[in-house]
Image (tube, rainbow, N blue to C red):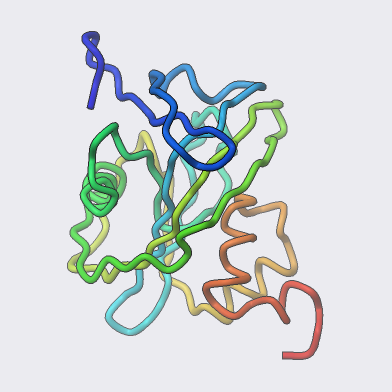
Length: 185
């Protein structure tokens, strides 16, 4: 849903995760970001590689940082799976299939170098690529298909080069906890 000015709205949440209102997406991410609803998606290739993307350099939060395939915010009343498909098209020019919820209760709060806060209840999905990505340059500066084990090694070696939500999600999604903690794999 958009407001009368055509601005995307995000769903604001209380501490228990219940909707309490909406706000224009353009005004939500600040130094005092309220808890709101979002999602992350990790796209897999037919051969099982993971799509990682590098955020556009002009993004207000974590510019130029490598992250999961894509993220977004469902509009008020929009089914989450519909929002995932919408953002795959918008951000990556990518059709996806087999969208699955894999972490329903993922929540995080992180502060980037500029002081802007991410504060999201962020269900995490996986999906299969049904074509090739054609990223929107306003969203993504580059992308790579990578092996999950190689991604884990990179996350362990240089966690600062990745979005904090990818680092946290990868521990759960790809069995990377041993790689992240330094324990033997």
